[in-house]
Each structure stands twice: as structure tokens, then as C-alpha cells.
Image (cartoon, one colour):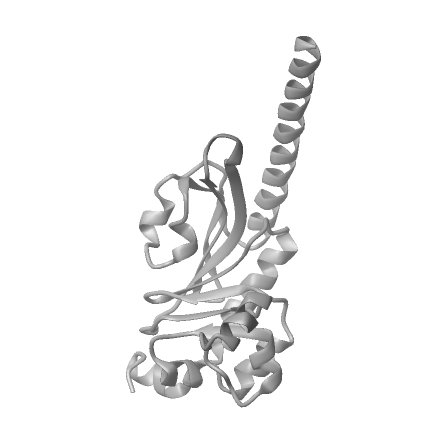
Length: 217
């Protein structure tokens, strides 16, 4: 029995190593075609570089890996895999996801956009509502939060709403001069492209007054 268990553990480790190696090679090739620098090493200080993004501050054992960085279309881009641990003992869980961070010359204000969930609808029933928009389709599809509702309306104008409705769904958070686009699972190379397109599409559609006045109105 002991040797059977040991064999299963060894096989599991070998499979995990193989899958990780294949993923690294695919992401390295993807980064090279995009003109980005690829670093597969684990970075335990990644969350300190981007402290405003809550998804990077959850749990313990936090670290980023498979980090690609550089410039695309004149905008800084960082893509990454991320992992963290919650619970302990038999209830311990390892969580993984991927994301991209795009830089902006604009002075951005806090704004959080993600897909609407069943629990959000329950929250609405209890009076814990998010920001609703004239587009009923958009309000049904997305949960939007911001301490500045006017800023949310300015950013999510009709052109941006139509753009987001036509794109794959991601969670999106505005930080200080940057925007994070992520999802609670690992990205394929194609999904990294999708996330970059979504983030860049939002920034490219920012109202002119923001570009002129650095985010202040």
C-alpha cells in the first residue's frame, strides 16, 4: 500500500511538472511573438508592486510567475499567472488565476467591473445595489462599483458599453495609472490576447476630457 501511494504521488508530481513545462513554453512563444520579455520565475513581491488590486492581496503564499512584460501599441503591458493559498490542513486550497495589467498616462479613479452573479441579484433584493446604467442589457450582465458614480458613468459611456458587451467577460479594476483585467482561472495565450484587447479597448474609449485634464473634471 505504501509503495502504491508513493507511486501515485510521484506520477502526480511528474504530470504537474510536465503540464507546467508545456505551459511555460507556450507562454514564452506567445510573449516572443508580441515583443514582450518572458520570465518564468516565481515573484513573491508582485503584490507589493500593485497594492491597489485586491485580488493580489488574498490569502498567503502569494506569488506571480510566467510574467511577460514590455510595450504593445505604445502602452506598457504585464501579463502573469498568480497563485495563493487559503485555509489550512484538510481545508487548505490553492487558488490560481491569470491577468494582465495595462499602463495609462491618465489619472484613473477607482472603478471595478465584473460579471453579474446570482449573489449580486440577491444583494439587489436586499438593497445592496451596484451602479445601474441606461442599458438594461449591460446592467444585467455586469456588476459595477465605484466611490465616484459620475466617474463610472463617464468611463462607461455608450461606446464602451457596446464594446464590453461584445467581448469575452473579465473582471476589470482601475488602479493608479493602470488597469487590471483578470479572470479566476489560468489564461491560454489566446485569452491573454483577449484580456489585453479588452483593457486597451476601454482605455482607448476614455472620454476626451479625461485625456485633456488627467482624469479631473
